[in-house]
Image (cartoon, rainbow, N blue to C red; front, side, top):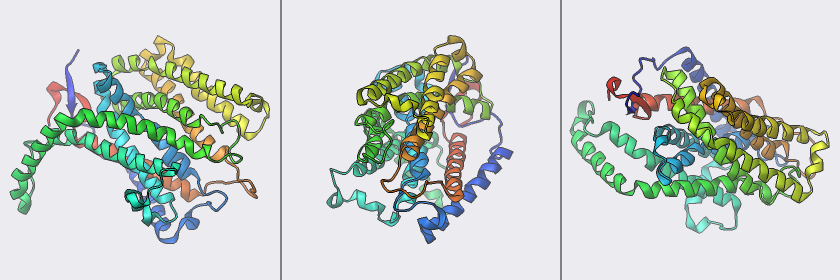
Length: 406
């Protein structure tokens, strides 16, 4: 087997491709909507109102984004906490995805807030409200995002230590900056374990607290989803989605950058996903039976149909697929299986925050404005572009040692 190590991308793939230009156009379009929202308010670019204060910016940009960024803490737990060293190659890409994902989660929250310019209030202890679920969400996002950037710092140091070469008048800063990077590298080597553990704890707290947001809305959330154990459901689904997303991004990155898929690692990782999905599915069934909500599955409503899609396509189908060793050994079928898991998580978050939600005195149904959709697509495009930029600059992906050129 060829020895590999993390290195900046050097496969000869150009940064700018036709797909990249499409992403740039979508990103610019999304930024245009963002500017309009900041200057003219929510009503100018959304269909949100007092009855429907949350829309797809919360359901997708925040709730779904958090779930899909779970690969950061799940792979860190496997590789660093229980010392399953074979999964080390997946940690850095998953960390990068989590860092960028949570960055855009934070941006999504800011965009969705009516008074976005007051977001800094969460940092003032004098304004903390310990009984607020939303406060827990905000403080966990802020702390975990800080931890993610700290965890990425050793990668920055590894890339630039001894290679600082600032141009022109800044050249005199080369040595001080290099000394600072070496100092940070030594410090992080001693304390990185603490931040990894903190990241796992904070992410678990945040994943569950998102579910608590809808627990406090009895009467407004359909009984197929409203449950006192909804925070546990969010956490269990995040475990599965984290490993699925780590597998998905590894396979897609390999295809996009002309790398060999790390199927020998991914097929082993794929064995855990159906186990986690079975636990999640079992918890769902027990919850439905305990609350007497099982008959609602047959009510033939939009809610029941969406619930069936969520559990059959997003849970049962990938369980059956991923239990097969043959499926897990093939990159194409493995990618399809984990894509179903990701689809199921997206549908679940949309179901909980949009499909299941109905105001007490609703006189209409919330349908996202095209500008809401465009901003979400724009944010996703920017995230992908940043991921592409980072892997070209920093040692994130595993590269063959003889072909590396840092």
